[in-house]
Length: 366
Image 1 (cartoon, rainbow, N blue to C red):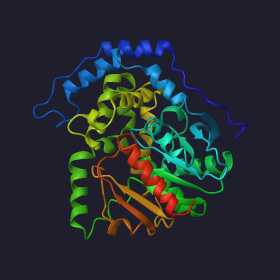
Image 2: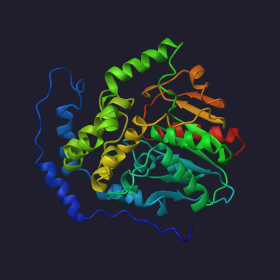
Image 3: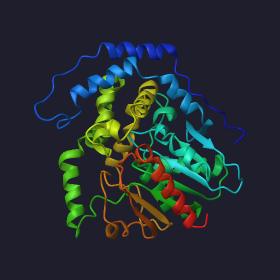
Image 4: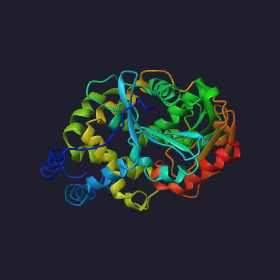
């Protein structure tokens, strides 16, 4: 670990000024007929959000939050992989790998890490190709590649012989693949999203209905990101308004809110996340997990046999029933029906998620 260089996030003043100027020159479309959000991001909401991003949002405060954690960049598989590493005071504390997804970043974990660091040693990387693990023209990574890189991070760079993981969204795919391919490394696998294959719906009408609704109403973003990511990247890399609209729509649709995102997720947290994508220019590269998934086999080689826990948040985007999940995760030892929360569990319900993670690993005797 001594040879791994430390990292501090420092966005140039010129980049902040450029962002404000671009936001000031935003050209808005009109809005399609129908209720706000029915056809995409609400025009009124986006105008309000961009005004705050331009004139009220304090990036330096968010930058300081990120820099309050020890950060490093390790050369792994041809890129400089960014990660947070918070060591527990006890040398016997279990290492816990936290893995985010799209359109997330390590910002998702800024409230979760302090809640878990009292018991665990925390490792929280930025996915290769995402925000702080991105550099222009670097190689692209799919789930399989990311899983292999994270195994190297935990075992070769950090020297951990056994560890636990927690993941949602792509983080669930990545950690599930790690557990399936290298089960001997795992103390346990904690998930708030289940990566059950989409062709596994036969025999369960409710699960079939979920999947049918997903395909018809909510999957368009993944289709374009998985088939024509380059075309989309031009607009979202050049326009902060476009980037904010694209990501905010997911925070609205996938969180457990009362109609306004801020009832579930703090506006500053969402904008800190969007800002990281903007300042790093990584949005196009972040689409590659979708492209690789669309053009390859299902990335998790089931079954997953390590002890597994699932935190079932009520507004998660897809929630397979336990009977279906257990066909693929064959050692589910904890299944918790959460009272509130959606896809962004670490942001929406950090207390509840931290409690469930701690209870799961305590139950394993770790």
